[in-house]
Image (cartoon, rainbow, N blue to C red; front, side):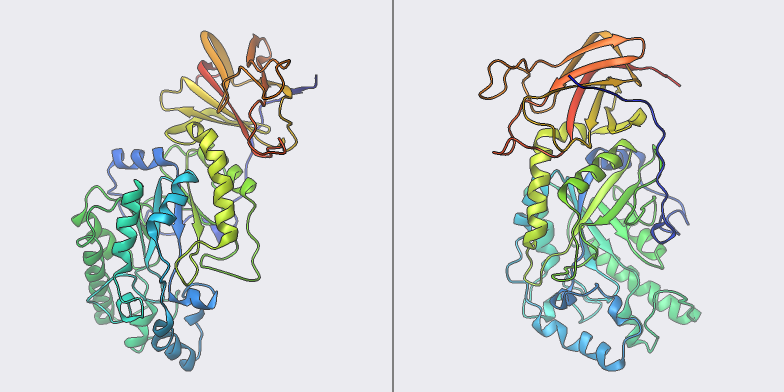
Length: 442
């Protein structure tokens, strides 16, 4: 029997300059209620949806307008809405897929930088009601998410390329230095749109503000809904990377499933579901939330490759959700290939074993964990298993065992559950350690 001895290691990951925390995340006071931030931390995993009418082209959302010719911009604004008809959009179906995958909240693009609004707004004609779809899609989004029992989040961009275009300003994202008169007009426009969003759709749980100026949006949103949790604009939101180490404050990392935020039917490379699972595990071990982005196709559905990934996430979540939801960091983030999360009272530790894709059903493996020590009441089990039987193999002892030694807590566990017909399961296995204590208390 091969013994794997695991030693404490400090692991650091560099956040590259292009994926830094939103530069103005803490530019002003954070008025999120502490208890609401803790509520969001408990949820842990959410779905981000980037979607607009330029999904018809399978291109980057909004940004193609920057540096574009007058002809391109005019056709983008005046022609693309005429063919946008997401007739297959069923938000309850999408939210159910998200829920099975372990996601507890969804954040949806109400308006991206292009200025195209997914709701029936009085502030501009550049919106979903002036398309063949002809309905307030945002209302359908909110209703569908609530029906699925998930928390409702809005993404909103204060930056608005259509507004700039209409006011004879160069479409751009950086270097927005405007006259005082135009700035006041711009902020009032943002405030009007924010007022609609947070007055017309009931209680909204989360707001992600992407772009500047944020303050008009923040002030109006918090004024109308004080229980709202603002992520980008108030807390750290690293993009396409995770934080390098544990942060016991609310933080939320947003990452794409592929290489683009919006629907990209060709020339894309999706992250494997196994990689996404490991990102979820690492994020939760470091105390953060993961917001995983998918782009709906022009008809309003999750594309098949992304849907298959979500199904693999669903299988893993169905077994391991206890280790991801309502947890906090342990005293040690990881010991080599074992990541840790802990219950809020820190009496239960979840040792999530990664990096063993060939662990066959019925095989026993042994590990030494050095950051945890047993008590007289310690119990050990593998999530999803009853520790009593391995199917078709009555001769195999499936019982999880542990022994406290001077060099650490020795655990011995069997992968006993059949998830796939070929008996292979490449994704992490979680060992639940109840009534344990940290070796180091400081």
